[in-house]
Image: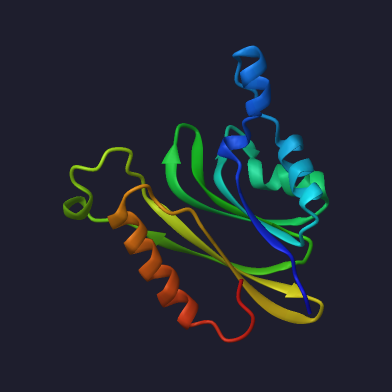
Length: 163
């Protein structure tokens, strides 16, 4: 079995070309879905996803693709949550969120810190279970090191195909 995978930091669904042309922010989840479609992948991990104000961005992107989806929140934001998502051609059987948090002592005096999350999903792909991990690492070395340790620890637990 061969699967094509990608990750995509959707930056909340921002259409940057529109912003450059007009100076106005525009959220365009159909554009995000079309970008994924053009990649010709079977699944795509999503970063900087909002689930807010009655719009689950991962669900909306998946609906545009006709795919399955999962979302794991990392932090709370006004009227919702923010985290990582996964869209997949294949059914998603289970989803687990593993927090990636750096203690106050470790991150002080870091600017731009936010808690992160590792999304771990099990897919049913062509009759086989495949585990997929999706994460968005922090900006500072201490955050990246913590995230790497957690990803490696969780990967060691997986038996079978892992992306």
